[in-house]
Image (cartoon, rainbow, N blue to C red; front, side):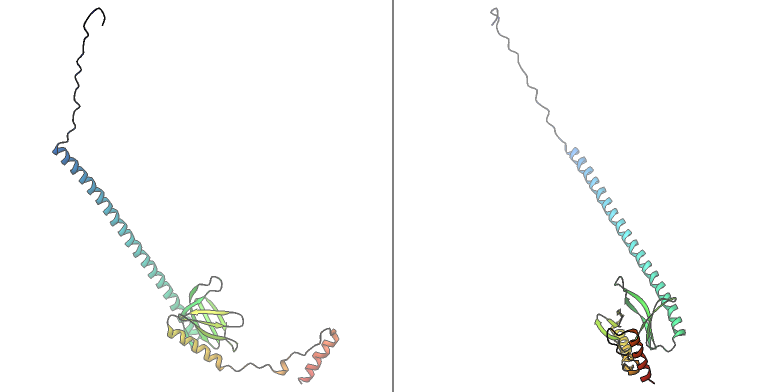
Length: 216
């Protein structure tokens, strides 16, 4: 205390903090706004889903149209080949289209085939023709799943028919042709003369002359 003056006390009045109150009206407005937002979001999601579905349907329809177009083109191509084949090979033993395995990529590609006079011709189109010569050394065998093989001295050709009946029919026709061919025998006149190793050129000529005289 200074100078005997009584101490002064300041009265502190605490002001209460305002209590935040949300009226029922405010809650209702908030809920309505939230509902509208969620509905708008749901509508947008549904719209996106519908759009995606329409796009998917459109893509599928486009793909079907392209496949139909490709199929029509292939059909037209083989119709042209068929007409050409009928003119060139009117008495073919058997003909039809099936798949052949490519030599490099090992994938099956559709071709048109004609078996005529011991030769299996196959066409990619009316201007592209290849052939496989069938002789007594060839072998034909089924390999399952409508597939069959023709083995030649140079290569094994692999095919896939459209049906089991086609597989059986082609194997039967080609095999019957092979069975019909006469056995291969080497005629003695066609045998080469044996020449000992180390024989000089004059000795070789003499052996050839002797073989020629023996064949007369």
